[in-house]
Image 1 (cartoon, rainbow over the protein chains, first blue to last red):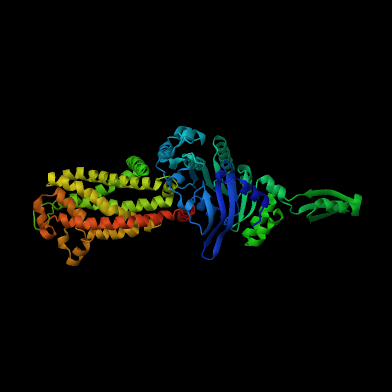
Image 2: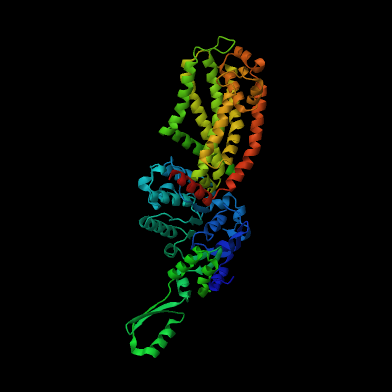
Length: 320
Length: 282
């Protein structure tokens, strides 16, 4: 696969010991259905990586394999240098998993639960990373100090989500997994959550892998975006890089003699030059709109959801 | 080694916290009190009946039998239903995402269920003593309690955990409840097993409920009452044999089945169950 060769070269240049995540040719097959078909990516220490893709692209399968919750069919996977299929408790102690909240531990009080879960990590404290996170500091970081004595079952949706994050980071993880962290959030809860993630990456050198189907979220949170569709990676790079690399068709609009025209052109500059050569001063209301990353992504998602997997992948052809 | 001590330490902390929680909310208090009220009511209405062939109060015989039933019920049904609900609501997945979390979870459940069983026992025993006459515990009785109660837990909890692992939906707890009620009916808890047809006596004696009832009677009733039991004895040896066999079976099966069940837990399986539960509610 030669998707975004540049990014791959950069990934390959990351020294092995710096690679918190190293996924090579990951495959997952259910019966005759390939859910993941040769997924390859790496993540550096301290990097925030977003796995972006439409529903059913294989994001959750990927993250669950990396978390050690699901066995893969084939491929090489190293998470903090360890194969997740064989990861022991010491390895588990270095990971944080933010699970989707539900009704668990509803009778527990916030502080009590965080303190209890923290005790599991005390055995894995090192001089460099003191585990667990002191409970009152942690509660403060996620902004739950006023709710510290409340029962978990009585928290609001947003508060409950912050508790989920707190549980995910109570062991001061070196790598944190966030699977669809803001599904079902209203805009203000989503913003609050984004602020929290930013605070985390500021406080610690935590590597974060998050999945989302929302490009806007990926752009806001991630240093690097890996786009997954139909079980394959179709793009990999920072939001800026991805935008720049899209050499998709630009849309040119103009009017002449009172009629309006729209034309898609691969080379808009050349097209416009020829337009003026031909019609000169007759051209008015000229507008050139370059395809944005968002447009390209939306086209891909639409194609994918309409069952046109191959077409979806080819939307990013221009990126290759 | 350190992970074992962590599991025990965190497990006891966990079990202790959850046990305290059962004493501070209405629903849990009700699940302690409701069976006690039911049992004491039953015994109250039995006060004039006697054990067939004796002039000993039937109520005084039923109370310890019911203690045995309670132990079996805790070990089988409570363990199974806690496991099913913890799986459905994601508690188990959180344990799985935590280092040594699963061991801590299991120790915690054992402490919780053991503690709940003891609390239930006390809630039924203390008022029961005022309702019936003839119960007494001698030194031998205390000794019996010392091995019988732990054996009861070892014989039933692993089997309960297996049942809880096999069921996938809290609504299916009924699948355990119904056979359990049938089993109680043929285990000589509320009426002596000797009055049942021979083949039913045989079936009843295969399962732990009968033997736990018998064991508790041997603790609380005068030895003369052994005469009305099958074999005219408390049959402690056979008791240890049958309960021990269940313990071995459970301890062989439970780790395999629990591990298989735990391996399948992931964010998406919990999400799928939530989806299902939401559909039921909505």
